[in-house]
Length: 559
Image (tube, rainbow, N blue to C red; front, side):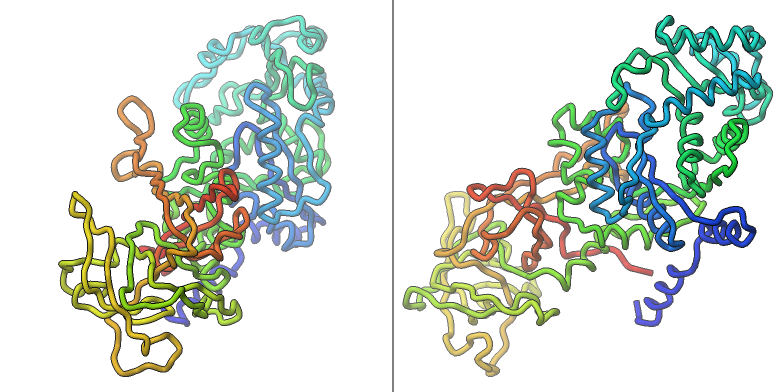
């Protein structure tokens, strides 16, 4: 892509999206004075890459309009919620840079208000206590072609409904024995408006309120109240809530909130060849297929952070994926493109050998020497480092072939190649094991060809990296592939995930000593092998572990 095309793409991305146009319209018409947004996750799992879009969109809108941004946990279902998930979500939002300041709230903070509003709806004749079972409610609801039937309990008196609802709150009834339903329209073409359940009995201890409540509001009732209480101006949510918007508006209107929020829906961020469903991830964790919600093969935000992705790369990915009403999928290679672009000028390029064979320089004498090697040829500001060089090195197995194919430009019995930052070498012999695998290559070097000496008499056929056998240290490296391959089908016939058995490859490698001091999550380019970071969970001084963030090869083209 040429420079002009790139600039055109950037200008296109800078133009306002449809959400900003709606907000501008509301401001012009005086419908709102201050922009307030929120990110409202349910704490029933770890956040994934799709949530990053919602977080950055909501926070970005608030920042753009000098407004405020809240983090609020929609914790209305104690069956699935845990404090572990609350803490992980807060950490992810903070890491992404979405500053909610001191505005972290819980839906459960508003349970008293929600109860009052439910009582108010009963008093208005807009809600009733129902004795139908969940299965019966589904049967009475009808479908897209058949209108629903009214519950036989729909016309209870206001006084009876108030008494029954108070008894529900007092714990008189068992789970599922009674519900509170909004009284709207059983013939509505929108099934969500057919007298939806707004409270259910659930004798479950809550992570925030303990055993104070045994009735809990349903999401579609609680969510608009939370937004209204916090003064949210624009409730930005994904497209599956579009059909729920009439109910959202009904709740804030019937509950007499003076400044109702405006719900605006946008398309989810879908990513190819990944697992984002909490149900699937939970099973992978429980079955031990992955080592937790932050396993680097997943695309939870915690997993991406552990693997070495930066918040800047995720922000760029969300930006390039765009904001629209149309459902679409972003290719995983776009995410990889973003992290490569973010790291290529920031991080030093060091040498690591992932599949080592020994290289012995037969005519090298002495204990060795120090060579000055640039940390990043594209960014001189990162300076140089001193690397020890001697007559015994390690090189990649693939960098030597006794009988190479045509156009092979690494070490052979004929080619003269350069050792990166060092000298020209030429192979003279090699050793193999019982299976015929090369174990040691013997070579000679030309002292006159030292890098930086100005030698120009001949050119090497290629350049390979190396590490010094005397000073290198051993570490575990983890190479990742996608957990699934959608081209082969995401699910097996029994509904289980079509798991890729090669999603994780573990190797012992040799690294140059500068990497021994690396801190958890610190990242580097391993020359020709990709970008890697120190694993923040398993790596120790005694047993260092490096995760490959992404390879250097890219199939993605920014159009």
